[in-house]
Image 1: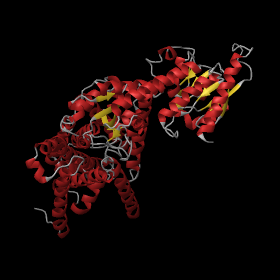
Image 2 (image 1 turned 90 degrees about the vertical axis):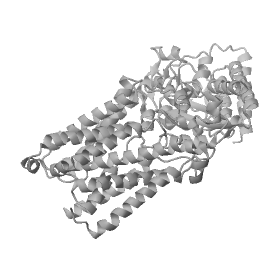
Image 3 (image 1 turned 180 degrees about the vertical axis):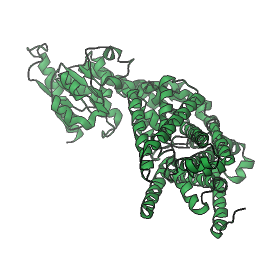
Image 4 (image 1 turned 30 degrees about the horizontal axis):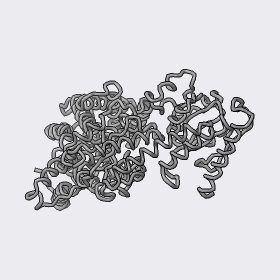
Length: 324
Length: 315
């Protein structure tokens, strides 16, 4: 059993408490008037609770897990702590996949859209990794720069196609990363993120070893390429499903694993559950802020997350520079 | 300049014009330097009477020009409703000058217009347009002191003056007035949710539609609530359920754009479980605006919308 530091003993229970509070708040705050007692006495309140609040909260939980787990997996695969689905171009590829399905098969059911988004995200992420192999100087800043550039190119192609097909505004609407429209019947595909998280957790030790680099991992008897493929597939599935259901959520996968690494170190088996919990807490907090500050209208969680995340990203970069 | 003064100048111009028409010189020779002055969004403008080569960039003016029997020399084809203006869209001789996101000024210049009817989506390009040919901005405009619908009346009258089609213009305005009256009678005091469906999401469409509700005295349940930020904001269905308005007026942006993913607004609204208990869904008190409303927004589109509202509310 690992030795827990005093800092962990204080921080982790606090994180669990805060997350639990945020879950309760997410269940109780919203445009429809609900009260704890009302849930038991008023059938209309209970009905809206089940139709709207529970699905939205579950969607937030799953999306938080999806993005934070995706982030840590990508960081291990690329051995770079600034990589996550939005800085590696993965989500932009998912967006391109979604747009293509809208153009090619306008009446496609949601599962086909997700399949397209996931496959595009998978191909794009492999392309990113292939490009990384060809980049000679893999400085901590070069890797995310390559990803951001690739993502910008793919995003540009997507915007161009959308403009040509008059889907620009429609695309803006579905990629805006909001949970406001989530009701029963809309969030269910996000259960896939929970599945991916379980797979990653089961294979956590191998991902940890893969994170030491291809040479060391191979010497330790790990099939590095297989682990990478499984990791990329999981990340692609998380990004594809999340993009289709709620849109893009930037930086979550970057901020959370980096903060948690400072507390828990690199052992994924130990840290993954806490990374997932912290991801959920951060996303819930962003959504609750967006839900309340312009009530009854809402600001999407992605906008709040983008502001918080961009500041954190810059902070990490500058800190990394000082060390280097 | 006061509105009264502006109107009287316009009236004087119209009278002068009528006088001109009844004079010995018949209207067949419009090439004369005769001009009229009309109100515009940039103040009074003097325009040559009966221009022949017209570039129409302002969607809100298009149906009126169609009613006047005018065939333009240039239009932003992608912004034009393909069914309602099929005669224009299919006419190869009409130049496509791109969209407001990517205007093709060369194509516009090559079309050699005598008059560019700009404004609306193209209002930021007024200087560029004016360098090509005389440009006016008589677009329907929410900033108009008496509101959007009043600006539709003024726009129609101005176009009637410029193209010497006062009777037709008056008929268009009369129909609009009648529709407003009928809708007002049916709708005044009723509470309404103004929705817009975009990318399969239902959101607050107040910025686009409150001018319509205001004109006929309906009460927007979200009036003054952060307005219309439908592209990067949201409105939870449960919030609409809480407000539980008597009516809903819904603009289908997806259908308007001919978006491939068009989930018809009807499906988005009526299959949402959170809205199932609201009065407007249960009683079917929902007005879905025409599919191309988003592209037209002119006097005729508003006339038809008010007719729709009056009929729905009466029924």
